[in-house]
Image 1: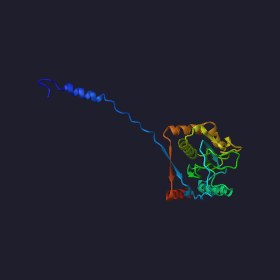
Image 2: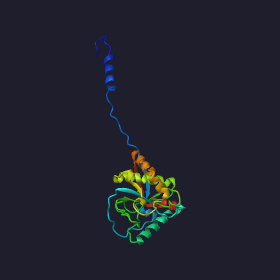
Image 3: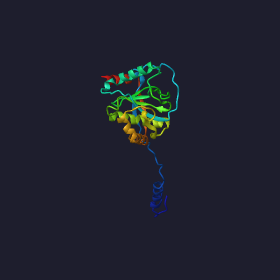
Image 4: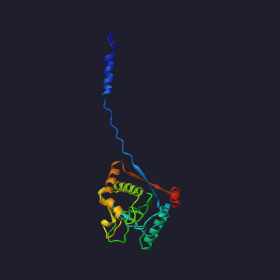
Length: 225
């Protein structure tokens, strides 16, 4: 107890002052990730691979298009099944690409990213991450949902494979082809895609969420309806 006639204010003030000046540990809040849904292979009706795959290490990100106009997105899953049949009929083990994106922005799982793609053109696709846009982008303009899904997928790949956004290119950068079409390639040539990918990575990145089983089948049923 304080001596008679002595105020306790000083002690209380000292305690409050000490607490008030104690540093508070800073907390860092990670930027939020965007979740990109991906329809698994079985959801769109993919056949099994016909042979074992070789392996590769992804070093760059190379955009393609299918070069056939897509005017009705209800046809997208059937188109994928057709691409796969055609590619396997050529002797390839599977559809040539790692992911496909339709004009509504739906993303479809294709061959494993651990396997290099295949090509009819004169470049070696080993080391390339291969997303393909369903449609002919010499003849039609890509939709914004399609480009947004492409940006998110590329941003995921940048982090997943530790490659730079600057490695984003088009098929025509490596082979004698117009792929991925003038309308899409213009967004690569002027750096628009690369800037959007870099911004997304810096803003928290992307997580892929694979839709499997009944969920995937229901999504594809809805697309085809």
